[in-house]
Each structure stands twice: as structure tokens, then as C-alpha cells.
Length: 536
Image 1 (cartoon, one colour):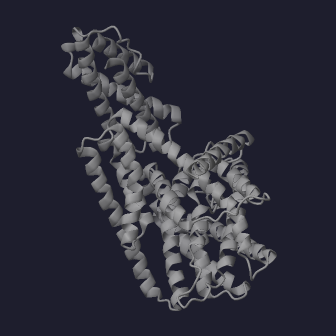
Image 2: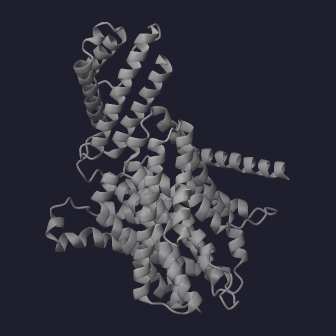
């Protein structure tokens, strides 16, 4: 039995890799392709009906996906665009829930306002992974990416809190807006507190205990689960705990993960982990449709599709109107906003069209209990799940497939002054090489006269500075004696430590984007690894 299960898992993973390769060949974002593949596979005769477990999503998939997104979010850019991010992550979620609640009550027979808010809370948050994958490789302004990433970090928390209060209203029959608002800030705020507290604990563990590359990588995989479970244990927001902890650890990572081998090990582990989780998530959504259709007892499939299309149109229009409103209205009424660069019509359109729903919405819908407290069946549960699936289908497939064409149609360029990527790279390398050269010249000028390795390195740095070259590892060192190698490695380690501090300073400057700094950090890690391999 164990062998059969293992073969089944390996077979599924192998099939997923083939599907991803086919998606790349067809130039379709793999979340959309896997979702459609899951739909097709699910309806093949003889295929067992698959039921997606919401606990699997919330406890296994969601924490690492959120943590990884928080880790690679630019804190500098996040702070800069905190206004638009908050208006999307909180304002738009609440507005969507409100409008969907009244719309669903008006045209779906037997739908109460509480059930409408329940549905609104479920379908209000867009999926970060789908949007990021579709946008990958496309020319999109940095501001757009930052706002979408920031929105996706927080909107899951706000929508899940709306869902919790709406669910409580359905189960108890009572609802207090004042109490709900107070509880919202308590749950979200304490989630942040738990995340920051957990982040500080992990910071101490990584920095002051004798860890290795493998241990550090393992601890970073454990961290989002520890943060999420700790917050949920006290009935606070696990999502906010993971996001705040991830942002904190990312901001302090230069102090903790100073070894190139550690950073590269972590990068490889997380890249593989997130890729596998993403592929599994989207095909599991598609495979779950037959079970969802089978659960529709009281409502016909055609009526369910009709309701789902109406709700899909509602959430798309709400997002479009809200984003254009918050992009332009403040510029008309607030003086400070008039001096800012106008977002125009192109950027709001792309952000609006990137509102694809995904796995969090479906998992939330599936987590609705089967029975009420008095033993009666939960009203309209199957229909809510089916409508959620239709909204995912419409937004993920229709908007996802057309988003590249929308971007191409707008022909949008950078909205904010950003140096070209090659100029950023040259500027970073120039500063790092200059720092290394000055350190060698100031501290080791007597030593380099007798150490051919240091002499060669200093000459190379001088040439690099003059020619803006980026390679730091072409010094031939294999034939040198042991004492020279040790001295050389000691000096190189000092230089790399100084350069990492300099890169951290660059993160807080407007000249260089976080992406450019991160690439330079990766090159520094490569240099560190090559020196270790060649010298020790």
C-alpha cells in the first residue's frame, strides 16, 4: 500500500512537470494551464472523484507561499505605496464583500444578506501566484508589480476575517458592526504582533546559534508554519503573522545570512519548494470540480453557472471602478497628490485586470461547515462553493489569458524614474569594487607587496573600476601556497562583508531597485562560493 501511494505521488509530480513544460512550450502561464488540465482530467471516465481538503491549503500550502512572497517584497517600495496597497487590500475587499452581499441577495433565491457577505468574503481576494506568473517576463512598471504584490500579502487576511464574521452571523443569527470592527483590528493587529515576535526569535536563532547552510534552510521552511500555527492557536490572523514575520526576516537577512553558501542553499530550496506547491495547488483546484458539481442538489448547474457569471462580472466591474477612483480622485482633492506622477489610464487598467481569484478563495469556501449548530444543513453551502469555482474559472482563465494582450495594447512604460537595469548593475558593481579596492589599499598596502594573490586582486579591481566590469573571480590562485591562500580568503571575506553592508544601504536608496540589488547580492554569493571552492 505504501509503495502504491509513493508511486502515485511520484507519478503525479512527473505528470505535473510534463504539463508545466507543455505550458511553457505553448507560452501559457502554467497556473492557468494546470487549472484547465485539472478540469479535463477530473471529467475523464473512471478517474476517482477528488475532494480538496481546505485544511490542506491553509496549513500546508498557504504559509510558505505567503512567506516567500513577503520575503521577496521590497519593504522600501511597500512603504512608498502603502496607501494604494491598503486601499486595495482592505478597502476593495470590504467594498467587494458589501456589493456582492447585496447583489447575491437580490437575484439568488433564498440567499440572505449574511450568506451574501459570506460569499463576498470568499471571492474578494485576488490570487498573488497567478498574477505574478502571468506578469513574469512582461514589461510592466515596477509600481504595478509592487502594488499587486503588496495587495496580495494583506488581502487574504482581510478577506478571511470578513469570512469569519459572516460565518458567525450565519451560525448565530446575530451580527454587530461595532463588535466586528473592533475584533477585526484585534485579530489583524495581534497577528502582526505574533509575526514580529516569532520573527525576532528566529532572528536570534539564526544569528547567534551555530547553524549550518542546511540547518538555516530547514529553519526558514519551518518558520512560516510556526508563525501561522502560533497565531491561529490564539485565534489571531495567521496570514498577518506570516506576512509580518516574513517582511521582518527579509529586512534583517543581511545580518543573519552572511555566507554565500547559506544564501544559495536557501534560494535553491525555496525555489523548488514554491514551484512544487504552486503546481500542485492549481491542478488540485481543477481536479476538484466534479466533486463540487456532484454536490449541487437543490440548484441546477445552469442556474449555478448563471449566478457565477453574474457574480464574476460584479467583482470585475467593482475592481475596475474602485482602482480608477482611488488612482485619480485623491489627485483632484489633495494638494500633495497633485505633484505626484499621474498613473494615467494604463496602470489602473493592468492592476484591475490582474484581479484573478485562486486557491485561497476555493479553500475558504470548502471550509464552510456542513451543519449548523442545531444540526440542520448549512444553507446554500454547495451553491456558494460552485459560484466560487465559476468566479475562479472566469477570472483566472479569461482575465489570465487576456492580461498579456491588455499589457501589449497599453504599451505601458515605467511610470517612475528608474535607471535602466544595465546602468544599475554597472553602478552597483562600481561601488562594490571601489569599496573593495579602498579596503585593500588602506588596510593591506604593505601586505600586498609580498602576496601575489592580493597583488593580482588589487590590479584586477583597478581594471574593473576603470572598465565597469563585473567579474571578481578570474584571479588564478590554484598554484599558490597555503599561507597566501588563507590570507587571501580572510581579506576576501572582509571585503564581501563590507560589500553586503553596502548593498543593504543601497536597498534604502532610490537609485537602485530591490531587484537590481538582489541580483548583485546573488553575484556576491557566487563569488563567495567560488573563493571557498578555489582557496580552501
